[in-house]
Amino acid sequence: MANILILLLIVFLTATGHLLMKMGMNEVGVVDAARLKDPVRLGLDVISTRPIIFGILVYSFSVLVWLLVLSRVKLGWAYPVLALLYVVLPLASSIFLAERITPLHYAGMFLIVVGVGIVAKAGLA
Image (cartoon, rainbow, N blue to C red; front, side, top):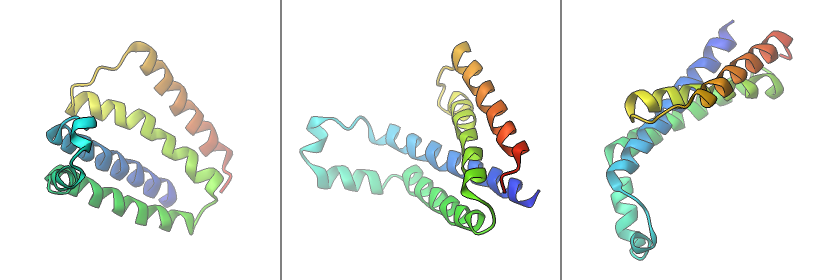
């Protein structure tokens, strides 16, 4: 049970990190050919944007927690649980970034949850 809770924490942390990085890149703006002509300025814009900094820190922490999980369970059991990111991130993006989720997207997310449940029930750990 503890391993599942830790895996869910990883899903939450990873989703939070990605969401923060996206929010930061929304502040930085579109990276197009013109922006790429001055990579130093672009790099400074990216690394000085607070949501990106916090996003990278949160995501890095999730990697450390992931290593803890890998020391405890089989990769073939743990990794499919990360598929819940395909559910959590669109939901969080719809709430925090006003991104639209289509009915077909909801159907896919449902299938992912069912699949993760089947893998968890199989108990490959």
